[in-house]
Amino acid sequence: MAFLDHTIGIMIHPSSEWKLIRKQKESFKQVFLSHVPFLALIPAIASFIGVTQVGWSVGDAAPVKLTVASAMSLCALTYFALLGGVYVLGEFINWMSKTYGVQGPEERVHYDGAALAVYVTTPLMLAGVFMLYPALWLNSIVLTLAGAYSVYLIYEGIPILMKIDKDRAFMYASSVVTVGLVMMVTAMISTVLIWGMGIGPVFMD
Image 1 (cartoon, helix red, strand yellow):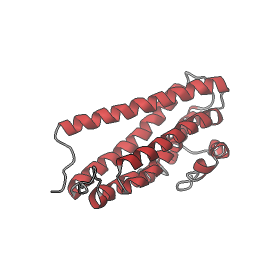
Image 2 (cartoon, helix red, strand yellow):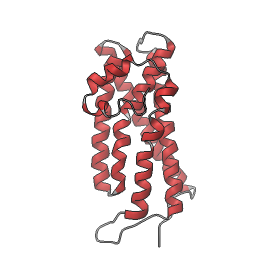
Image 3 (cartoon, helix red, strand yellow):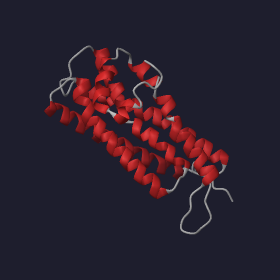
Image 4 (cartoon, one colour):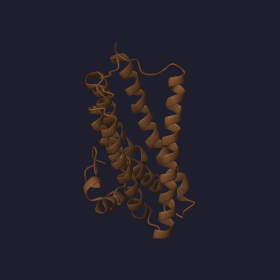
């Protein structure tokens, strides 16, 4: 599979792009490694630049910034969390495939689950570029829109990739969305716990 193949297509014409993705004959490892490690760099690097060079303000106060060391460790943690999150989502999709009657060789189903996880998270990864300007209102709007498009991609992609009828596809997609939300909440709780242990941001004086 080509480097970052289908990344633009899934953003501008998802229906036809899902059909092209379905025709690919690659492995879970290939589709994952050719996309996720590179896409995850976007929010990680943008966040690092944003919180160390630009900062964010509350009202008319001076911009708040993080130290380089603190930002580097937090952004690295974010990067690996994104890798792990996409991988785990793909595994959940594969695990649920039997429940919803997905047919086909195990390797094929495994690829389809990985492809779904990779491409539905693409809008969120690309939206990470807005972290260059870490204003809460801006990033909240952008991530909400990206999240909504990711949900749309799930409902659009499952019946095409998994080749199941619309009723089962709807239930399958709803389950995937639920898993994604649970993972997001879990990540937020984990962040709070980690910060509570003293491994949190260090602000510039």
